[in-house]
Image (cartoon, rainbow, N blue to C red):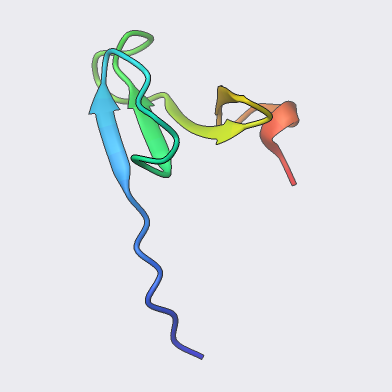
Length: 54
């Protein structure tokens, strides 16, 4: 099965609207873009946290 899902990333120093993007590359925590966050439970959480795991 092929899906046409478009996953979007935004690199910024301020948190974007969760309606604007799927993932936020938080440049305030790491200027090199090593902190990727997703919107979960009303807040942006790093992908590698237990609170953001399925």
